[in-house]
Length: 154
Image (cartoon, rainbow, N blue to C red; front, side, top):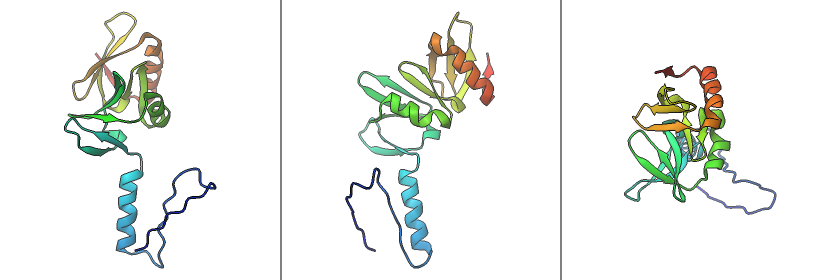
């Protein structure tokens, strides 16, 4: 196997090419590994300092905590290097929505809504995480959920 690096101003992003005379198991395996590493995944660091590749669909929410952005999984928290506004741009089309200045949630991971608090919505996620939509995002959240039809209201 040959690995070649080419630095040229004609490239605006990294490109990976797999070249061979035929498609075989080695080509399939390399392609599969590269896709698993780079397709829609985020690097995160758990509380023990171990690095993980995170799939966005497995994330319950992203939120800021001090100067850090945390990806909340089903059971674990991960520190990620992306900013919330970057995540919002990337993930809005993938079932994520900003609900406040400091949080983005996976609307497919919402278990229920509590609208008993005047002007806001309490969101209960499937993993038990509870959060609130800011007042300015309440109507957007209702519209998005209606379009997605993913949540039962409580």
